[in-house]
Image 1 (tube, rainbow, N blue to C red):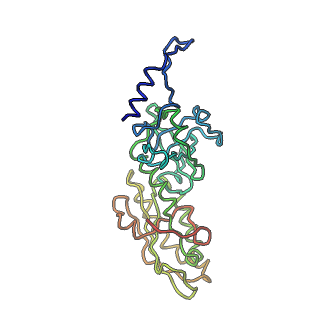
Image 2 (tube, rainbow, N blue to C red):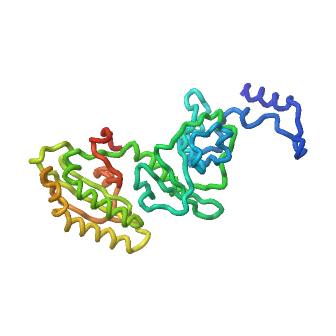
Image 3 (tube, rainbow, N blue to C red):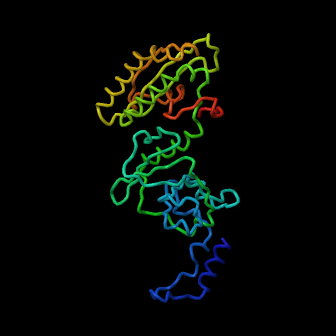
Length: 299
């Protein structure tokens, strides 16, 4: 409280200056001199305009159109700079349209996210690897670009996509080897029908690596968007084709071992439950096995 009073007194005692061009009074303190406040207007999803890059000493990504704050709101607001000294951002580019394979968090490496600007939808492309930490003592020099608005649905997609990169579950190598042709088939169907297919989920037993003589049991759930009736038909056709083609696809890798397909069904996003999500592994269109990335806990 005493520090705040001293700051206020310093503000009043500091001589006023006039801008020679506009004739307006120049504030005694610039944004750069003001301390970081818990009342900051920066939030998760706030936009740092390209025009402000130089002001915050940001020159490492000249091709980006803007940057998006992705730190949690509480971390951004924290004014204890010894604990939370910076805000994490991700660079973004404006696209003419979005790619269905990169919407709704389907792709763990690239996200196409909708913002609203001047009442129109703007498509932004975010690449997971293009992140940076920006010190709050630099960020306080500028304000978020209010021309862009992130709605609640898009914010949820952004949060889920950011979290999914750290909770992706890697499949056992021995299962991936057996399912190479099947997974390729799933990717082809998923990308071709990305407008209506939300995700593919796998459940398999046992969870560990197996020798070629030991079989896996597999269930596949195809989750479709309920926006249009045609998506249900789309998902059911994929499920039926997978069941039909599965033996032929598996024959391509028969030397790696057997997989018994127990179920392959289509579910709407309303039917697929949180429990289903907890018990199954979401298969991203850029999934990997333990061979290329270390395993981690599924959250």
